[in-house]
Image (cartoon, rainbow, N blue to C red; front, side):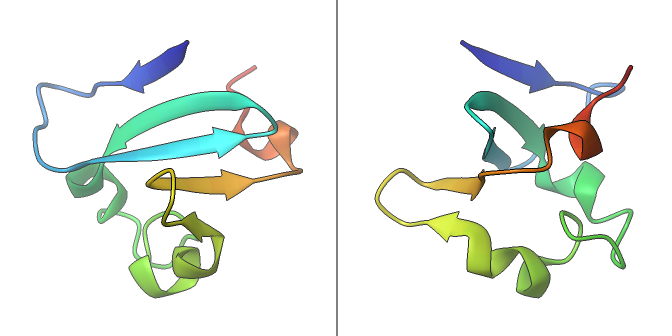
Length: 68
């Protein structure tokens, strides 16, 4: 199951993320608002991109993505 992160009707290319098996989608437009962050900077997140699945894969660090 993929959790979609939708903020105020933002549209644009959706990026897919797999964080320790949890799947997420988020608008690239939203992430570009934070260019110094890992997810907001296309160059920084490139090393985590899996071309076969079209997903950015983060094996560890689920706590970093938690909203709790």
